[in-house]
Image (tube, rainbow, N blue to C red; front, side, top):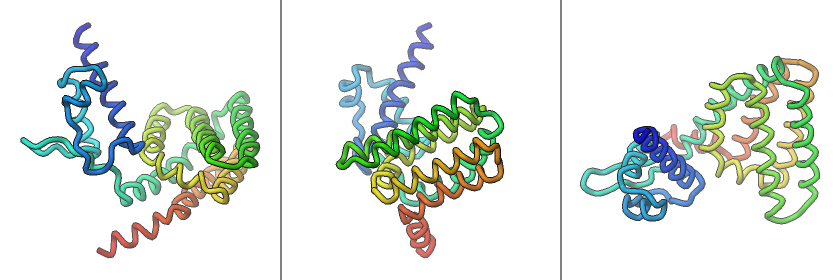
Length: 225
């Protein structure tokens, strides 16, 4: 029981640190001090140290012996790679969702779209946050509708990795409107049980986000070095 508690505690510390790194609470190259983090989270240094090692395996942290742990962060190349892989997996997800989606899930997606269209008429930061949140909810329902725990887990993980880049993209008015329209087209293809079209539209949707973020240009610059 004690061993389970230790693993559970380590897991919570890991998830918290991971979330804070991906959301920008901790900046690139910032030092992650075990004592400070332990005090903030109300835990000993051991689960913090183990969480940092796990984050190093994910490439989010670099541990320098006798010096400390530092945030590596996500590079533009990382974001580019994630989006390219995600575009293909989102297509698979839409195809499988077409085969397995329930009427209740279709209603959930329709509700998300109606709320998105409503919030697009608003102005200010609050609107951007709401539309971004609804964008994430649309994809979450699709992941669940794929009826694949593995695919849902992988795509949800990718979603977290690019949440900052996504927020910048969806928060821009023109892109937000296009994104909601693309979601509606994906839903219509799924509703019509057109697997090929749903896959194609979902794939193109993510590629459009990439173009909006100019990730292809960043990749070109990286490749030319």
